[in-house]
Image (cartoon, rainbow, N blue to C red):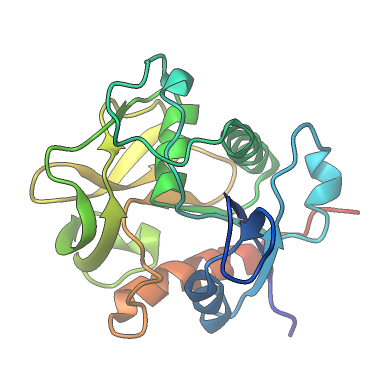
Length: 232
C-alpha cells in the first residue's frame, strides 16, 4: 500500500551550511516524523500566485511547520518589539493561501508552531508579539481536553517548544484542544472540510521518546490516507 503524500511547506533561509545561496529547507526531524508515521514527506516550495489545484495534484495532506514570525501587519498591527525575526511576506502569503485552499478543498492539514500562528491570523485572530517569558528551548506539559482529535490517548502531552509569540485573540472557527498551565492556547481544531489542527509545540522534537507526539503525525497520515488525492 502506497504511503500518503504529505506536502511539507519549505521554509526560506538566507543561508545554510551546504548551499551557496538562499535556501528552501525542510527540517530533517520533521520529515523523519512524517515517514515514521507512515507518510511520504514532500518538500513544497513557496511560490506566489500559483495554481494550487495543479501544484497539489497527487497530495493527500499538508503540514505547515515552524519558522520565522508572521508580519504583524497581517493581523492589523505594527511591529512593537525588536524580537520579531524572520519575517518574509512571500512565506506569509504562500502559507495563508495553502491553508485556505486545503480548508476548502478538504485536504487534512497539521500546523506546527508558526503554522498554528499563521492559521490563527488567517482566521482573523491576533498574536502576542513577544511573550514575557519566551518558550524557547523549553519543555513543559500541556493539558489536552480532546485528545482523540489529535490522535492521542493521553490528556497530558510532553511539549517541546521554541517560540516567543503565542495566540492573543483566538480566530473565528477555532476550537481549543489543549492549553498550558498559564492558560495559553497550545492546540486547536479548525472548522474545515477535513481534519485540520494546529499545535503550538514541536512534536517532531521528541516523538521517539514520547509516543503521544508521534501519534499526532500518525493522525495526519491516517486522515490523509482517507482522502482522495487532488486530481492532476
